[in-house]
Image 1 (cartoon, helix red, strand yellow):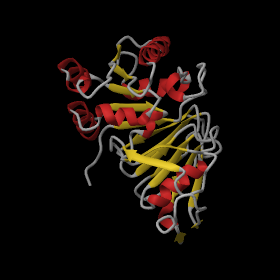
Image 2 (cartoon, one colour):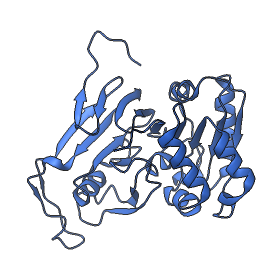
Image 3 (cartoon, helix red, strand yellow):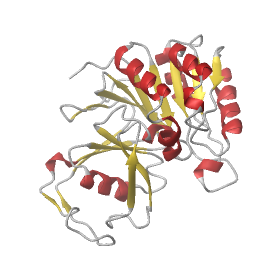
Length: 287
């Protein structure tokens, strides 16, 4: 297996402070602490950061929000790349930005928009190539932007219908880290059930549920370190002794026996390949 040289930072989102309930119509406020880690991993305040608000239905406002947030951290080279179609992903100016950026930051909203407008394009190819082959290259994403990093991507689904077959809808993501299925706003929106069903569908994959103001720094395509103030819930379906997802009709309650669940917080680490947890020692400082 190829050694991945870039860094992924999926983030669970933060409390929506817009006026609409629907996430794609809201402005995100990502805690300075999380963005600080993004900037640090990208090489510091002079890093070239490109924000892609494609998932949002208010991309201009969301882009401005990120410009303000990164400016507060002292960043001097931040650009918003407003991609609204596959054609935009093939424009020379867009391609040049992706080729020269130190960090790409995907906003929240509707993750399917990211794969519909960027998936399979020149920009997508460059993102994958640079992530795999360039040390110091960072791809970060909050909420929808984090979920789109997977190959088997959660596209939606009802938390209130959790643990019923058909409660989760899957779609193809950007396939940056095919070993994971990522879900966000995990605790506040009660998404335990829909991630469980996603892992029941793909028990060879690892489900990651990110709480708000919480993220993971993923190095080598394998070594995950938790950052932020909340929790990351890890779902390991490899230990399942009973999983009736394949035989059930939609709308039927599911059975899953012996799923392994880990609850991780700041500084804890997870090894994807070996499916192992390393907990931050009590005396160690938080990250």
